[in-house]
Image 1 (tube, one colour):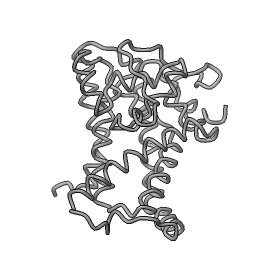
Image 2 (cartoon, rainbow, N blue to C red):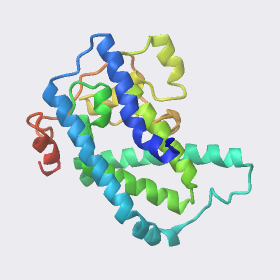
Image 3 (tube, rainbow, N blue to C red):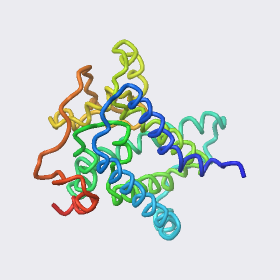
Image 4 (cartoon, helix red, strand yellow):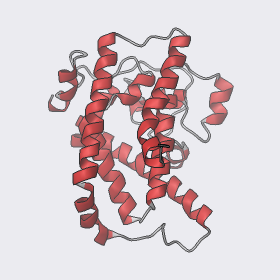
Length: 254
């Protein structure tokens, strides 16, 4: 049975991480310990189950709750379909940008997101390194925005596919040649552009929030452009004390 767009969107992060992980191995770059890799995979699996459970049991009631707040309809926008489709994709990228900034600004959301920043060996595998409850918070933000602005489901799935495929690339451990990175980063988030966001120095950590496009960081003046990779991580008091899965799951409680 051929895969549909929903299946491809679900598989996209795994495929992206697999490709860029293999490239990292080809260049003999560090993947960290086997315990780290296993814990990251398990964490992603738990996050996937949490997101699936939300999708099956809570999304419909949540949509009904948010639906009266609708203020615009991309689906019924009286413009050519290609224009509406492209504008909807760009809008969803803005939603991810805003959601990412909220996860840095709102203390409760930062407790969920900071686990991703605690990785001191940023690589393609870091794409999978999110607390399960962060997947839930991101999903609710995305669904709320999609309902309020009536974004077609096909656009949601297409953006999820693009975003998923881009994740392994943006966390890729090997920097691109500086001249290539420079030109690409005018338009899309490159490895060097995103790695700045993982800097221990929160001047860097609170910049470069873009998911796929760098447009929003440049427009809202949150872009930081350096071509030297930073020191990664967060303050020890906020980071997990080991690479065990239980430490990752309980990190928001620290």
